[in-house]
Image 1: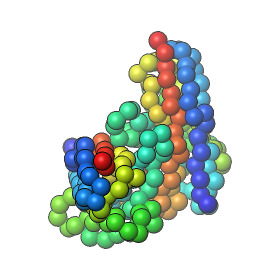
Image 2 (image 1 turned 135 degrees about the vertical axis):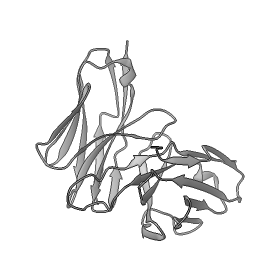
Image 3 (image 1 turned 60 degrees about the horizontal axis):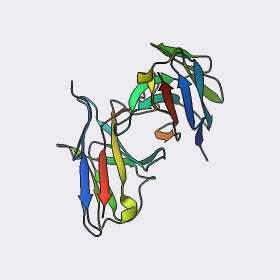
Image 4 (image 1 turned 45 degrees about the vertical axis):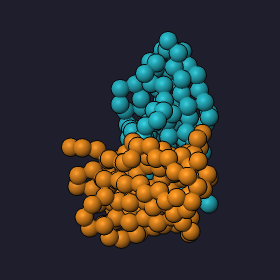
Length: 119
Length: 108
């Protein structure tokens, strides 16, 4: 049973270009979260998606950032017109169920991350 | 504002020297408390979930405990391979908030 997969693992972009990060959740998981991690800082929540729906995007900048999780294929985090401050590690996590339901098992499972460098 | 803090920021232990890491949270409606291990250049690896005060879980040299305001990750007789950053997180319904982590170094 493959874990969460992310690609590319490393991405280099020049200022003003677009970055597209992909995440394939674990088999059987329909809930995907995206996080950003800056050096020496913790993980910051960006967006939570289910298939074809954005559930919570409160942690995502209003401009230049978008996310989707189509019915078929991986979840995509898209950053338009990248700036140097976007350089970070971006992690995706998946879980099998809606968090907060009775019965526990809210844990998320993380992918290896995509390290974005903006020159 | 819901917050998760961790202490110490960094901890250096000798092999075999037991210690504890702290995770404190200010929450309204805490749903669960999670511990992860993160190695450099990798994604966080799930360790434990705790849901109610008094709950404890163990895995090899690690034991996690939970009170109403904080959680501890106890490391018994650590080995160099336990060196990593340990993250705790809490969820409030659908939202997950991570602490900044404790960088643990275990020296041989």
